[in-house]
Length: 285
Ligand SMILES: C[C@](O)(C(=O)O)[C@H](CC(=O)O)C(=O)O
Image (cartoon, rainbow, N blue to C red; front, side):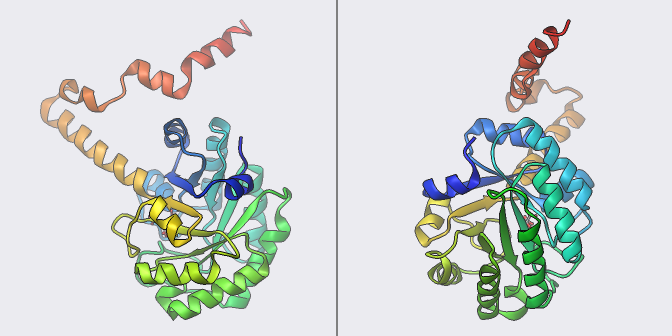
């Protein structure tokens, strides 16, 4: 497996699709992606049937990650939200997520409980408090190749200049990657890249229907972003597919006319590795 630091050194950009369980991660791996983004929003949508407003717990994220890293070998960027509390919570979060196989842990400067960066009504903690949390995160890592991603949500609360200054402060604390959330225009995206791209990898967050214009990974890389995530897209695509599937089954009482849009029994077994599992079992019979 290529580690995230070596991918960041060698790849022109890293495109990481959002995943929320082992199944979505296996499908993304088989599609050819080199890294995954475990999205807090997608965990909330799919596991809780709830909004991304800080209801998901550390334990739910850690368990989801453990199941993913049990099945795929790709580096996983993990959404650690606010670290689920203060610096002490951050230490537990970073240690636990690293042990569960995180390649990079994302921490943001919202107050707890947080909310999706593209929802109104956010609040941020003071810069000094976030710096304390980032330092705690950096000290808590056991592996030298585990990265810490600092996200600021300040743009919506304090404006672009303040958000960029916060990012600067987080970089000074030692953050490995920066994420300036909910940039609203391409001009703002370019300003962020002009200030940071030569010094640190920057992450672009593509939320379909969100506040940032959605652009392709190669375009974003030309602007200066190094990592591009589409965090909630898989959950939205699955939602659309399930709505069509359930609607059709309800109407027709059969799946006969939806089979073209489904994996059949053998296809799903191939996807999840049933033949390999059976072979493994037979070694002990
Ligand atoms: C990146 C994000 O934190 C996530 O949970 O995946 C969300 C994405 C989303 O709501 O689709 C975000 O706050 O941007």
